[in-house]
Image (cartoon, rainbow, N blue to C red; front, side):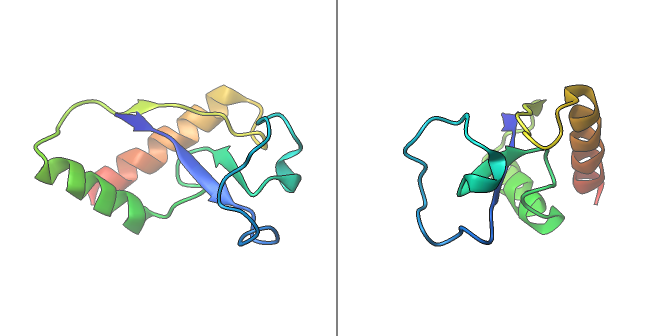
Length: 91
């Protein structure tokens, strides 16, 4: 299972659900962007997500995937994502 998060841009939200263009435009001009895990959906959302996986008997790994345009240092983004997921799974 991939641990990957997205965030809607509030000033654009509601204009489109899907981006039709390439994912290489400025982050501020996009309806949504990939973000480090926890910077899009909150802990409650992720807890419900993991609860659904467990209910389906999935207890395997979570592979963190980061494409956050506002966090160009992927190592920092991965560390922040891992800490968020670890905290979320413990509670």
